[in-house]
Image (spheres, helix red, strand yellow):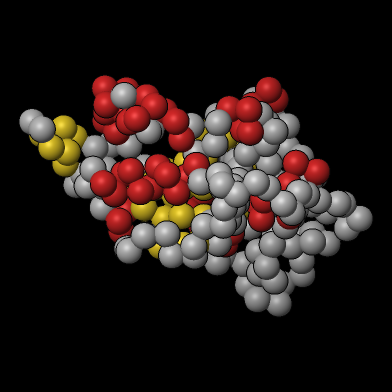
Length: 218
């Protein structure tokens, strides 16, 4: 697995480092957080900021103009009850998963060609078109709901009592992949309080120099 940033000498979970302690790295995530350990496909990865202070933005996310439609800006509030979050909240959810919380899943909604360029460690790729009934079909989507997301079929209805809390993201505020899936999930009854949206997505993650991994290196 490729870890695109240097390894941290000390891994400090969110909230466990005393304020004022000497920083473990030159570039920390916050004043009290150096890095977060996660498991990605059976391997430990330390998520941190890029330590090269001369590092430049990944060219894949340097474009400032994309044709709209389809690449139009998404609102901050995507849908009623769906909470929009940032990087620190994503890191906290990843930490919770790493600590054994099986009720949460952080989902990369992008297609494989994008994931091959790098994704957030500790996330699961469910391409948006695989979760779209119009493209994949109700049977295939139903299998994802049951086998991966924890929903239960009850005759013609879905029961989401034991369904996972989903943190969903794609390429950024101009990307419609995760928003499409979120809206579709809400239509079939997935509880809004069990869906969170990382609006900044990979563009913001990369721009902040946070660790990414690539499938071919796993």
